[in-house]
Length: 168
Image (cartoon, rainbow, N blue to C red):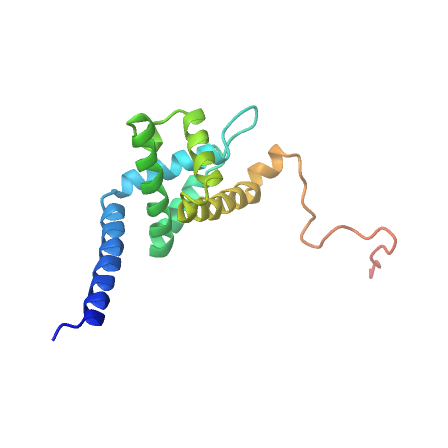
């Protein structure tokens, strides 16, 4: 017998499963090529080239792509983010996110990050990817050269107050 409680229970399950599967279908509609081009555009948006090389020049996108191929959760995070950005880009300019100019991509990412109530999940995803992109960018040896940073040698900085004892 179908009671009111069971009806609410089944409608609740049907509603949330449809949301889950529609999100999965939207993500799976993107090919790996679409995801990679969208990710490349996001990397270029976060750290664009100016008088210094950008993140694409330093190979940050290649590092992230290698992580995509080995970690399905990371692939899902990026695919969801790119799907959201693509949908907003199509709504705004009738183009995919990767086809937008840098200024359009920057304003779109800023819009998502500034309206947390409207895009709560996308904002968290972009912040997570932004942190990863910046970490990969500043951890590369080419960035050290670009910033004129010379990390300590493997033994650390020499201690001039107590020089090493010559045991010869």
